[in-house]
Amino acid sequence: MLALAAAFTPFAIVAGFTPGPNNLMLAASGANFGFRRTLPHLLGIVCGFPLIVLAVGLGLGTVFQRHPETHSAMKFVGAAFLLYLAWRIATAGPGTTGTAPGRPLTFLEAFLFQWINIKGWVFAIGAITTYTTVSGSASRELVVILAISLLVTIGSTTTWTGFGVGLSRFFQESPVMRRAFNVAMALLLVLSIVPVMM
Image 1 (cartoon, rainbow, N blue to C red):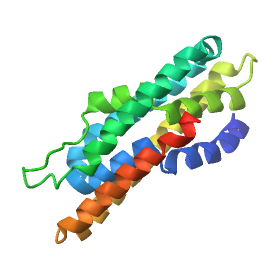
Image 2: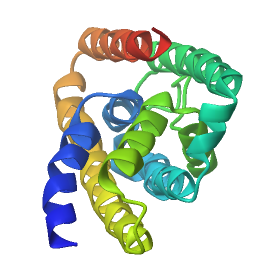
Image 3: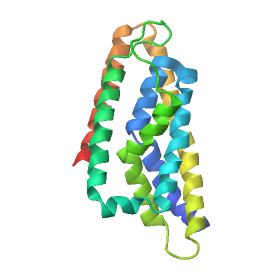
Image 4: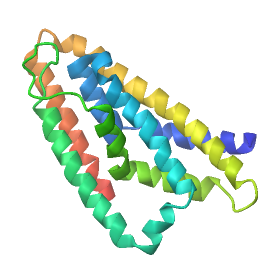
């Protein structure tokens, strides 16, 4: 199990900390609404994403192999939702004024988003197919992968939210800079859709 942990941890860190829908949305939310108001969004990811890994580990990933149309449908639903979220980010204002047109995602919204987050599914399927075996130790391997995925998810979501909160200090005196940041985050979120739609 130590060998598995040593092999899987770098993969999980790279996948978890690189920009993707969850991380970009958390940075934007942290910048616009602060850490406390973003916490339900963060916790929705922390609770929801490992369940995707567990579901794939228990065999749900084979549904995509047997029914590729299900995968295609999820890609389009996920892309549409990400476009909606990108619009929300682009039009968000500072959450402390009470005049912001947007709000942070709720726990439930963030939790449910994980089920249509294509990057999350790609990670989960890649992790399970690459780092587990069909031997009797498969269940222990799944536990190791789940534990590392959870720890990396906590670390990455906290880091990206903190990054956004740190940037918000530069935006307090400049609404123009805040708007430019929001538009940049929205564009990056849209660009994150492109690879999974290929």
